[in-house]
Structure formats: C-alpha cells, structure tokens
Image (cartoon, rainbow, N blue to C red; front, side):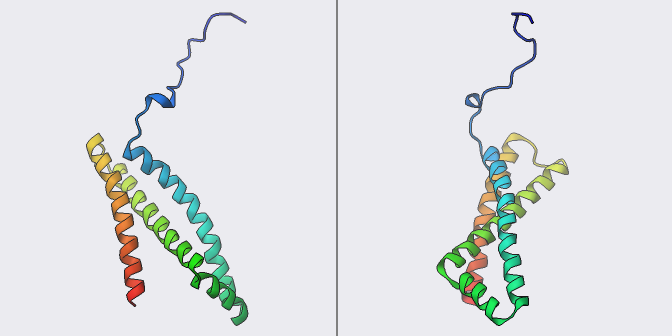
Length: 129
C-alpha cells in the first residue's frame, strides 16, 4: 500500500450542483414510477373485489368512495398523467429534439403544468358527469 492519493477522479459533491427543474422532474418521474406500482395494487384489489361478488365489491367501493379513497384516486391520476408526460418528454429527447438547456428546462416545466392541468380537467369532467 502506498501513502499517495489515488489518481482516480472523484465524483463531484452534491453541494456544487444547483437545483434545476430538469433535476426535479427526473426525481419526480422516478417517484411517480414507484407510485404507479402502489396504485396498481389498489387497482388489482378493485378488480378482484368486482370478480369476487357484491359483498367484496361493496368494501372496495366504500373505500374508493370515501374522502381518503377519492384523495388517493386524485393523487394516483396525477401520478399516472405526470409519468405519462415525463415519458413523452423523454421520447422527444430520444428523437433528438429539445435537448438544449433552455428547451429541456421549458419541457420540464411544461411537464409539471400539463400534468396538473390535465388532472384538474379530468376531475372536473368526472365531477360534472
């Protein structure tokens, strides 16, 4: 063993990075991906309850009709839409478009705005109908 320092480059510390919208949307995209798994478990529960008969389905319907259940559905719909818009943003990047710093920042902001607006629009339509 030698007392000399390694010649390998060190990874930059997080303190030198400035928080940017693209960084935030990357993190949120990963978190929403995990959220989709949780929501899918509840969706499967609802399907199994529907297939199991009226009594089981009444429990699932009571949960999804409650305040907590509706809040869960609202958040899950935002998670689904946000992940979809994030995936579309990545698809556009894969096609070689919107890859400059300004364009990618604008796309990250548009992802958040589009997901929030489409979630609110979806729930407004559901509420009216």
